Length: 206
Length: 206
DNA sequence: TCCGCTCCGTGAAAATAACCACAAAACAGG
DNA sequence: CCTGTTTTGTGGTTATTTTCACGGAGCGGA
Image 1 (cartoon, rainbow over the protein chains, first blue to last red):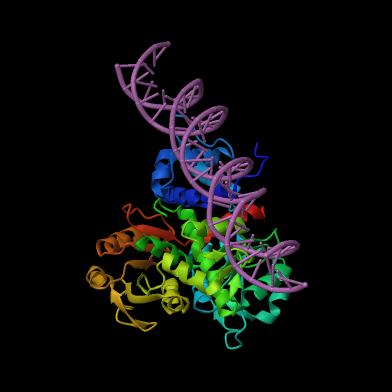
Image 2 (tube, rainbow over the protein chains, first blue to last red; image 1 turned 135 degrees about the vertical axis):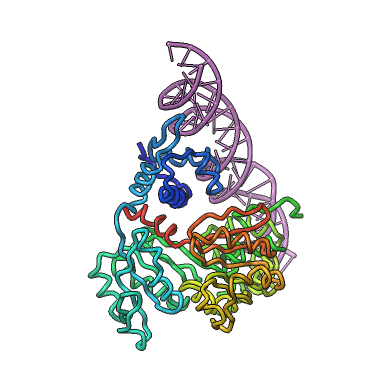
């Protein structure tokens, strides 16, 4: 079946398919087609069929895809048919927003540990979590089963913090700090930098 | 010279080059090479040279690139050698974080208008801005010179809000709502959905 | 049952993107 | 002014990604 590895660019599209399909599911749409799904997310129908075919045959000719079934399959492929624990490091304005954001829980991601190095914040509660000292990071993270961290510390502290997280067993980092992290090859990093996105758009605004 | 249009994927890398170069500039590094720049952001040297060559010749053989000069050039290419006004719609936890985030101002983006439809919030101040009612959105945005909006409203309100923004002269939207927007071809939209990024990573975490 | 539509999965083709490798420019040291 | 080293910009090649287009399965109606 899928012995040779799937291109990362294909994997990156699957969450977008899933998001749109989950929306259909909530709205009671039972069946869809590659055509319809493609139009809803701005991707060609052929592309969607090709992407999905990398993982198996999920549709029926003449009918299309069962939304429920395809959601289940994509969740399994992306391993989001289980709940994931998250670690949150850096409880500034952004970290606070992340800690209280309801969208994570609804989609299977639970923040279980929060850290900040500001002594005034340590011990306080945020979104049901006690803020721990950065000094306890390695101990606490190692003791947890979290494999994913969200990093919302200042750029100047990001690399150092990432190193500690990796040493503590973290395997994937969602980095909100506006800088590139240097990590071992088996650690996955994704970046969220709104300014980078804005600058991409200003190119076209002439 | 560069009459035929530059691939979007190339444009998307320029902000990353710029970010790294600005970091070098702050640290007093006067000169760099495609090799060094590439290593700092995990992109091949050949790729960087090829990308830059789409816009002109910025380096010197044997020497490399003047960091200062290349920063200036990239800023001009991306049109971030000027300040840009932003509109922020949706002042929940995330919107609040965006309103107070210092990283925008430092990199030339100024939030000039903030909107929320919650009457309790309207009239209050956030990060030096008065929160306006959503009812005044079209009037206020049309009167401003902002061309870019950040959208941090609930998914259910995103499309409707985007439509109003576009009607008011907005040409680019940074969408934080976890849903695809349907917009005219000449409107630019970029998406920030952390859950999508997390799901991309869980694929590899098996 | 047969016909007309729909729509998947896929091999082949086309289009894009990334990489390689080299001529030539820059410069430092003798 | 010559030599050795560095590093750009780029034509050519390779690799990846997207699109095309078609056989055939599914389904509904007559």
